[in-house]
Length: 190
Image 1 (cartoon, rainbow, N blue to C red):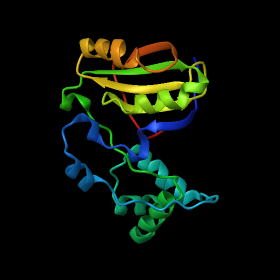
Image 2: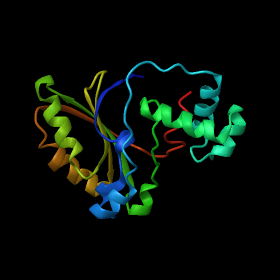
Image 3: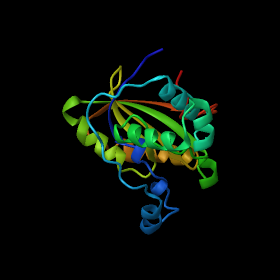
């Protein structure tokens, strides 16, 4: 078992949209983009209500303000205001889980790449630009670049690995791990 920490996300996370699939045009993507959230600096203290709020959202990201209010003992207005504060501090972001099969994608694969440190930024940015990449980040651990890749099938994955990934600068090693089954995606990390 190895553990990695994300140092820098090149693509994906709170600003990720499904635009790379080619299913939506630029105008449709813009209509789906949430309004920008100004980020505040400084520490945030979480209380028991915050912990209950975050625990429920981790279990059910679709919980409404009424349900969150019942769990926290707050009013729906207080829940809405606190969620806005947590978003402004970058502690909470809204994301979606996609059933890639609905888009004809049947091969999701995790890539761990080793890149010469002097070329990590260049390789990470290049990888982030690939339409097959749903998430890319610089990491700690035995490898320093990670990506979640989606392809229509195994033949497309092979083509992707032997062309686009092979062309990335200063790659010294690549490990692939197909995702056989996903039990639960983003959410409860306990």
